[in-house]
Image 1 (spheres, one colour):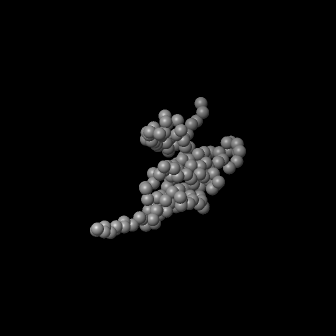
Image 2: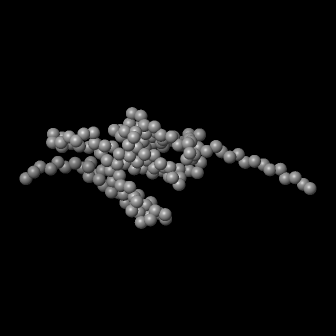
Image 3: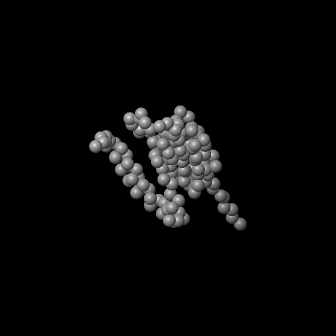
Length: 151
């Protein structure tokens, strides 16, 4: 009989992933998305901080071990999509490992942006395992009073 280590955290992480998939599934069935077959599955989800400043929005995503060239940031129809992949560093044998907790594979996050976001000026940079996406706000259109002249 072989001994199997009981790891409750791995079960909780698996449950969290399954719950996330259940709650994210209806978004894939919105009109225009077809049958939902274009849903991207992710192996892990980076933690993010979103901050609003007077002239921009800033998103910081934790992506340690992900090369900048393996990150893709897209903006389409008011939705910002961050996707990428943490690749396996080497082709090492699994022998000798007592525990493997660092997740490898693809990640995927989507954010709905307000109408004030300037999609043409979005910038992104990765440094020290943190992706920073800066989304400037559009210049406010000031109301203009139009003088009505009489005859």
